[in-house]
Image 1 (cartoon, rainbow, N blue to C red):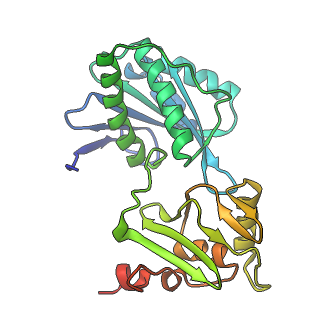
Image 2: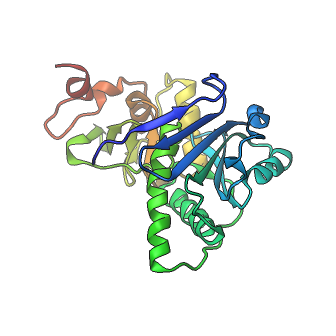
Length: 277
């Protein structure tokens, strides 16, 4: 994949305020708006354009951010409405076209596609009550919208919300965590340690297991991310832990150094592969 040049402009010099983000030679522009800075975009003309928007809230018990995906012909008016009617969010990211060549049918299709992809990839908790309706487009317009989405996906991850980034599952990045009949497989990446669907986890936990890891494991059980199958837990989906150690602790049911517990097919630990020359 070729490199990309991404620009982030901070209108008021506050790095925690409004940000304008775009990719060189792309029509896609992102407007990042902290909720407490909403008034700072009232005088921007681009926020009055049609586009798609994402409202982000805090992570839930298992570390997935809450997100609402919508579209509007006037983004500012819609965000103002949500400022009154929706409590969960603290950040909005709006996407518009620099050339102003995106219409209602385009953004309806894009809204549906983004919601469907978010559900499929499952790295966030979607707050939409129902999946948005997909508009009917020509083959040419579908290609235009999907190209828009490709750049949107890069920008939204750059701004800190990689909800459309899938695990690559490259063979060279695969590691295994095994102990007494328990076996899990995962990948170490920018997201942390992603444990793959079908991996196993111990139903037993040692008495000395930390409360934080016990709470995380119980949350995964409650959310049915891991489910009991006879005498073992099975991961029902790919799940990204923030660290190799938290992944290993949940899988093995004990406090453990994940950098040593995860090994590749050659028997090399994560520590040997990523931290030692």
